[in-house]
Image 1 (cartoon, one colour):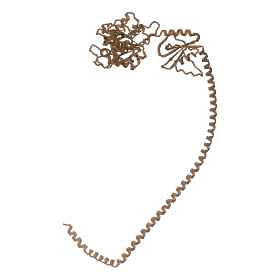
Image 2 (cartoon, rainbow, N blue to C red):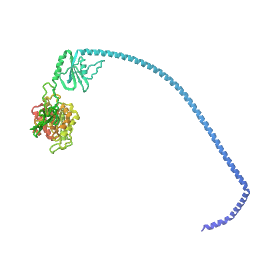
Image 3 (cartoon, one colour):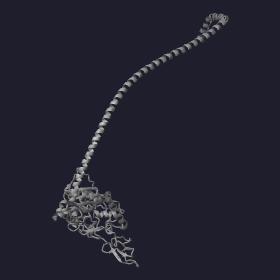
Image 4 (cartoon, rainbow, N blue to C red):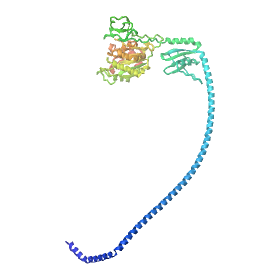
Length: 564
């Protein structure tokens, strides 16, 4: 409301000025109409001038660009010229260096040619020296060969095939020039013959090595195909050498080959003997024996009953079990080194509350260093699970122990010892007593023998099983045959007897090897018995051991000191 009067007042005061301005505009318009053609011409000129200026500017810009391009080309040319100067300088330096290098190369080549010439001369000199040395070596070898031949003509050797003589003072002949290859027992014997001081040679087939000795051993260590020995000396000593040779072979045990008897159902026409052990009653007081009956010229069979009608019926033979006699005095006997093992069900608990587990019994043996720990070699083998869940002494354990014997074969340590002994963990066992028993048995060296250990039933209880190394080698070669032909019902000890007898392993008898409660001979107070069975708690086992040691002490048997 206040602004409106002010606006009206402003408009009234401005009216004269507006009229004056309008008048001036009319005058200017009239003047412009008069000057219109001139202005248009001036405008056109101006446009032409602007175009000309623009064209001139464009031309000047192009000219400036051309000038700049020329300057750039000039700069590039200057740079290229400078680069060329530098390249010329480098080339001149390279030329100088190349000349210097060429001079060095020429000098090096000249030195190399001289060195090559010197080397060729040295090679020629060395070749000549080597040829001279070869000639000298050849002459020396001929002299040595002549010397050896002269010695050889004055000496002789007598061979002892399959004999390993004892070792004596070794001899190491050295040839200065002559090389003598020795690849056989004949080479070894001949080499000894050519050595003036050589009295004996031993050839090891396994090691493929020849051993020479300056003295002759009168006794052999073993009769084995792995070795061949020779006695050597002057021709005038032939009689003496022959006497020594005869003495050696008189010490050789007589080892009959195992009979290859036929099993029931097989043809016994050629072997004329039966492999099967007799069938006993429960008390082993009565037996049904197998007899080889002839049917005709081509066939015979082992039977426990009479031959059928129509058979020839001639009795050709029966079981051929043999007991090995003691070796005569002077004949080599089996050594007494022992590999002993026990089979342990480590994870089985004790079968009753008043017995200990097999693991506890085995750990007691380890802790006290008794039983099998007194053998030269020993092992605890894990027992296989039994079908009836029993322990290692159970009756139905044949298949389990077949696996254990396979473990023994795979382990291989038994081959390093004369005897292998299986000892139940619940048996109190004295290795030192066993060695004395073995000395008394005088088992012929190399014999395939197992020991019948107790006067009870079939005379072989499994708590203490003793075999020669050779018996086990024969068993392992025929284990499959036993597994197939011998029944698997009953205890492993009777199975082993049936197998050993069937495959021709002989036996020796020592009823003082074992006292066994199963045979009502559980007395621990015998100072000569080797093993006492069964003692299934650690306390009773140790008590039996101490009682046996005390008995040996009371009987003034000096070996008790090794059993404490």
